[in-house]
Amino acid sequence: MRLNTTELDRLKTSLKQAGLKPTRQRENVLSILLSRRDHPTVEEVWQRSRTLSRGISLATVYNCLESFVESGLVKQVNYEREPTRYCPNLRPHAHFKDQETGRVYDIDLPNEVLIQLNSILPEGFRPEAIEISFHGRTKTQNS
Amino acid sequence: MRLNTTELDRLKTSLKQAGLKPTRQRENVLSILLSRRDHPTVEEVWQRSRTLSRGISLATVYNCLESFVESGLVKQVNYEREPTRYCPNLRPHAHFKDQETGRVYDIDLPNEVLIQLNSILPEGFRPEAIEISFHGRTKTQNS
DNA sequence: CTTGATATTTAGAATGATTCCAATTCTTGT
DNA sequence: ACAAGAATTGGAATCATTCTAAATATCAAG
Ligand SMILES: [Mn+2]
Ligand SMILES: [Mn+2]
Ligand SMILES: [Zn+2]
Ligand SMILES: [Zn+2]
Image 1: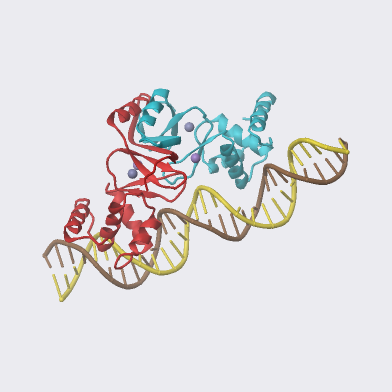
Image 2 (image 1 turned 90 degrees about the horizontal axis):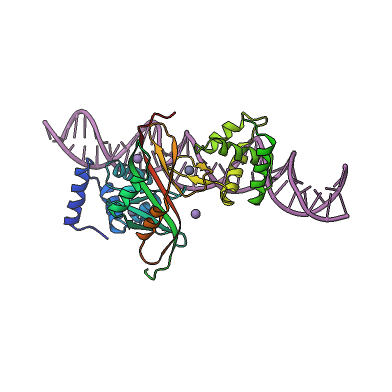
């Protein structure tokens, strides 16, 4: 789970492009998000950081994720009032939460669906963002 | 803003049909929700209840709204981690939040859109609910 | 109409995710 | 190496919501 030099350079570059100083903590938090795209909560990212050479403070996990969201590197996912989850998938997509396992899946959003969704808005409504969340069950056999 | 006997009987009936004893507090909370469909928060419902003959405790507003949601009389609307809002519109609809005024509008959801949305789910995903929230600006001249 | 069983209301305490604070440590340009 | 600004940190504060246990209200039965 340690990054090789190439991957680390890629991360540093992402961070710099986003206008963020590439600190050890930010590199770790971002690599945690990218390595398992399972929409972890802050607490989960913090737990995972503990397995690295040096852990990260909870406050810093909050700070890192906040700056990633501000700079557009990740997106927040909220279900009801549960702890916020974080998602590094930047393509337009919806979310599906399996209410038995709690797992959150990405659902790709075809452009035609986006267009049709915009078409239901009355005159004068200018959307800046749309959020689509399913919840239900999955009858799949995957892990 | 006081209810006449006919309206009050209608409310009592709704509550009974939902399996809830028709108390003064529940009648008031439900009539507040129905009289202005602007998706108020708990705090706002509580404020509005203060203008009635006798107010209602904040805990009771929470309790009433929770039982309404359980019994399907109203729906919750969440935006990020802001206080939960409540909506008595039972038709399938999306929400649009004007980020300048904070106002939340109902957007009717045509059946064909619902169908198309379900069609983007992979094999084995069984949705029980879907939530669609826009946010942006409105260029309208209405109040 | 009373009564008793059950449900609801209530004030205040507790919870828990998130934000704030002020002190320390790091990053980076010179 | 140094200074200035940025980031990190532990702990306190915030605040929407939930919990608790005591007081009150509802309603079916007699
Ligand atoms: Mn936004
Ligand atoms: Mn649900
Ligand atoms: Zn996602
Ligand atoms: Zn609504």
